[in-house]
Image (cartoon, rainbow, N blue to C red; front, side, top):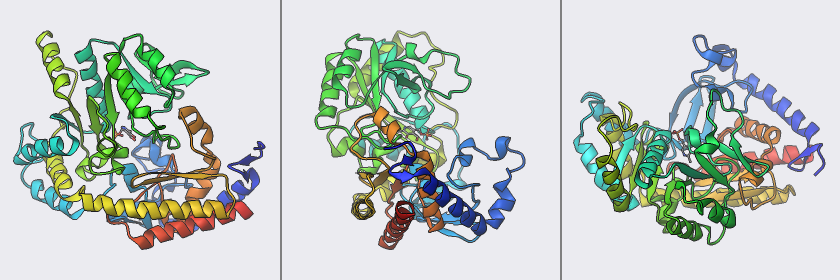
Length: 456
Ligand SMILES: Cc1ncc(COP(=O)(O)O)c(C=O)c1O
């Protein structure tokens, strides 16, 4: 590929498409431009959260409301939403059962640091669904990962964790390590990070079993933390046998295994773990678990619980370093109960799986028709197009496959055709309330955008 092309498309054509789509976007969003386009007063950098600026459009649009998987902005535009809050609304916006549970709880107190009937029901539901006996509730997947890693260190008495290059598990400090020319280093771009994180973490490439075996042979790793499929760069699937070898190596070396299902819960009601018979010691899922109300859960085995008990018995009383005040609040547990009982159902997943299959096939058809050397990856309801040939094997290949300028132009072209997909990567989620017609709309928009870029 010559440097003047990205993903097989000349840079000049990408720039021209982005320019014309930006003009169209501005034309369609006069009110959003006026209200938020020049920065919203009162916020540092003009937005409530910095990544609201990182979407591919020239300025963010302002949302009027969202229902099921349709999102409307204050300019009167409607979008078929395939971003779904980057998984937080994976089951659609405001599922009726969750909205009813929130409404019910709204006048009964929102947080009081004591269990409710919903909390009692949720403990059983989590154990049944995910197959682990011990659970705790936190507010974000970041928190759940942080606490689970702390337990892993307490249970094993080992200092380090191991992550795969290119991973993301939320803003957990010691997971922010990368391989740079084969050596571990702090991830580029971290602000205010004064520690050398490589003292706390080892990092190897996903799918690299010899490197994994070598890293674990030091027997100083408390826990390997991984997504079952790498979803946070371009998607990387595990190779045949990877997960069973990973489990074997962790067991041989006395290392715990934490599976982070926050995104791969797209696979099925029990996540990729249950669908593929994985056997983690610790398990985390956040984002959609309470239907969009901030909440996460982390679970572990009897063995981890026993070792945690021993560690606690040997530790003087004091703050455990885990927990936040609003964790496991009554509102979150009401929403979680409704989600587990009525929303994350096998029927919902069957619908998601079927339509996501249609979407993936349609996108792959467009890619072939336009002779693009791109590929499509799917994990259950989660579909992604990647502007490079595949399959990708690891985080380094995934990083190299990213084509930011091209992806930006694609995202904007899709948006102007009424389809919203996730920023930062090319992810599209199919929800239980996504209609076949919306999938067709996205497939047609993708085809039109591909044609625009491929033919000039
Ligand atoms: C796999 C994974 N784990 C954890 C997180 C952190 O989730 P949160 O931002 O809700 O803390 C993310 C966020 O994208 C994620 O992708």
